[in-house]
Image 1: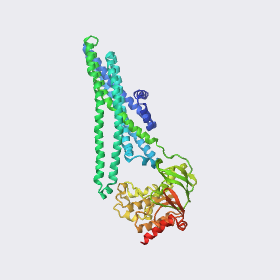
Image 2: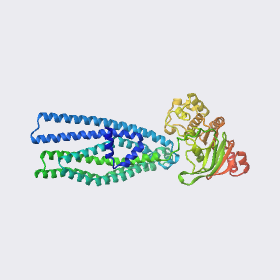
Image 3: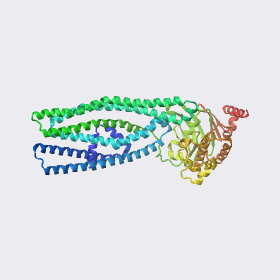
Length: 590
């Protein structure tokens, strides 16, 4: 039976071969699960045709005056068997289609999430949040509907049409050819409607993506908008985008109205054409009355199915856009997480002639070369936009260098398994991301295998234990989305506790004390003096007491290394570093 399902499936989708390939590519080995439910849908169609055939035989017996009780019972039993077959086939197909679609899209969601973690940050910078959310939610939901509903029903309708056309040929080939001619005339309109719908769907997606991005921007920036009294203007922008979505929806329906109406009118023309042609043949004596009635019934059924076919066909072609978007995401080049390079044995970091630009735009780093010895502290200083954060991002391999290479333990960072690399790197950035979860679980991100006591100890070192225990549910207190229920300093200390718990051999610290008061900053600095022993540390800092104790200071200017050395060496040169520190000391005196 499954072989029959495969055969029918191949015939039905021969014109949409590219879409079949796209679906195969996305769902892989699960593609075979689609065959049997589709075969059952075709079996349901066959059961429907049996009822039409029995109706035809009954009409013949009525016209011939040969219908008797035995015939009625016989026809009733066959019809009942066909109905039971249809119910069983449809129910099983329905359940299997939905179960398979949920299972397949569930696996696809996990596959996409795993793929996303392997992408460079360039992908997320290049694509808007609206596009990403639309692809990961709406497109996946649409793809789920494609597998569970649209595709099986479209094939069922196509099979029904084929069976009905074959049936009409058995009754009267002349009228059947006339029906086929009408159907043939409707194909260009169907294709025109499909192409129009595709263009409109692409436009609709673009507008929806813009609206989603605007909504996220409005919600995320509501505090700033209120502070600067910008709510009205930003709400107006949001309102305009929503209004654009409304207008686009109306415009889409209006533009599709003409091809839809033309197609429906043409396929419904089968009914009067059958009546006219069949009536003429009947009057000429070339067509029996029972055959005319049977042909009319089949013609009405065929016309109704063809009218619905257009909607499902256009839906199928529109859903191809969703499958294409998902396929585009999966095609995007990822880091090689299957790399089998040995574990990192030492944690010195070397930049060799590194050049870097974001997505082939303006160069951010130019010919950067330096070595951070294992267990040393390297301070990165310079004006905003000099390339400090970029160097840190490259150490963690959030991006790949444009030219040159980065070595960790004398191994090219590209040849190190990304999971192994990220396990070796701990970070505290200026922007602290907290999940909508308990404080305990937010700290546990640093080391999911850590014990409760380990979390408490890390919190104490990070000077956040006291404020956490003062909360109503202590460590089980739920953090609001984005950590908005906590102050900037509290979020910073939780991030620091997370880094302490991870205890990674390489630490990236981006102004990690920026949000702390003087008392807590002093405590944190003491804790980090203990924590950084034996670790390779990169720190972005502007305060003298953080900079001067570093083993190496790199002063960056417009993406280039202007000065490099320790505090004493650079101060003695009386260059840019000297001027910067002198200015900072004088400002403190004032």
